[in-house]
Structures are given as C-alpha cells and as structure tokens.
Image (cartoon, rainbow, N blue to C red; front, side, top):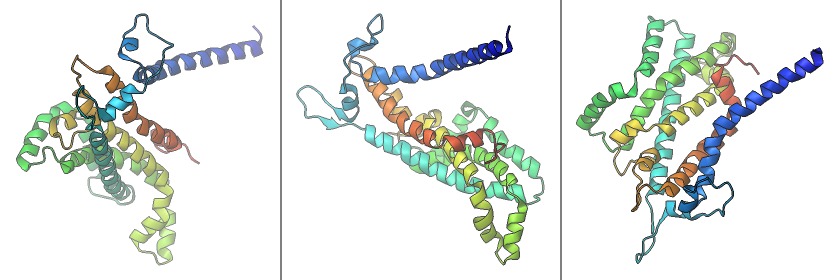
Length: 286
C-alpha cells in the first residue's frame, strides 16, 4: 500500500474514533437539553421523537408554580440556585486563597517533615466521602452547623484544600526563585516579592485550580444532602426531592438541570486554556 494512502487511512481511523468518543460524551447532554423542551407525551413516546414542537413550559414551571384555582407563585428554585452559587464561590475563594499560601510555603521553604505533611494533605482526598459522613454529621450536629452556610462552606474548603495545595505547588515550582531574589535585592520584603514577582507568574495555575475546585463544589451532593436543610439546600439536593402530583416530573428536572449546568459549562469553556495547563500540572509552557 502506498505510504500516502496508508497515512490518510490511519488519519481517517483516528478521526472516526474521535467522532465516536465525542458522540458518546456529548449525546447525554444533547438528549437532556432536547428533553427539557418536550411535553410529557413527547418524552415517553416510543419510538423516541427526534422532531417535535418545542415548548418552554418546563422552564416556566421551574420558576413559577401553577395550580388549578390558585394564584401562580414563585418556586424555591431561585433560592436553591443562589445557595449553590454562594456556597461554591465562597468555598472556592477560601480554599484557593489558603491553598495558594500553603503551596507557596511548601514550594519555597525547607519545612521539617514536608513530604509527610504533603502526603497527609493528599491522604484527606483518598478517603471515600461515605467513610467520614457519619462522624462529620455527628460533629456538625454538636457544633450546630447543620443547615448553615458556613457548615457547607467549611466542608467544601476542607475537601478542596488538598487539591488546591498540590496543584498550585506545581505551578510555584515552575517559577524561578531568582525572580523573588532579584525583587528582594531591590528592597522588596518577602511578602511584597511574592505579590509582585511570583504570584503573577502562577496566576494561570491558580485560575485552573479555582476551576477544578468550583466544579467539585458545584457538583457535590452527598454532604449537602445530609448537612443542609431547607434554607441552605443546593440545587443537586433539590433535584433529588422533586416529585410531581403524578410521580416524578421529568420535565421540571431536565429544565432545572439545564439551567444548573449551563453556568459551569460556559465558565469551563471560557477557562479551557487554563484547564489544559491544570490537567498537565504546568508541563505545557507558554
């Protein structure tokens, strides 16, 4: 076989496999979005309807509760969405701030037992959540942290901290120490040299860390289900509790899920170049 034909054949097979993998990953999202625009009859039609008259009723029902003979009222979904946004952003901000300082210390200073401390921090991520669920619930009940914003924020900070330290440390390791030393020779203090010389060089890694932490906090379900109450309930927990008068209301669930995942999808798309460096832990240089 001619080399040119063989090369094109191999390239064609690669693109074919990539197309299959893409379809496998994208199709559930596509079907979720399409289903959110269907009526109940179209959802359960057999064979499945690929062409239908789209409706916005499901999205309207997410925000407005309409019952026969009663005045329409606003649902609790905006409140749950606010809880998800506030708890996720607050926990990410705290985890990234403290994780960045800790990572800088591990990267720049010779600490006694540094490797042991790093392993201990990483080990907290190895524990399956179900293994610590009951102790955390008992501790939270004693401290009065059940159904509080700070209770969930502390939990998410704790679980994101290990990730923030390990990931950000890799980026600080990339920044030459000579930059700080030159800044301190010019009269800068250690903290000012960190802020002016080192931190700007690691912002890409910090941004990638923030994205991963946000995705983790945004999607967390188990701890929110156990430790939150009605006032602090997040969207994943509220979705698990949605039931209509005639069973599970899939229309509201699919519309709510689309609204819920849309901010993260957009944010992740905008930050994709930082995510690539985050996945490779900084091995791809600008």
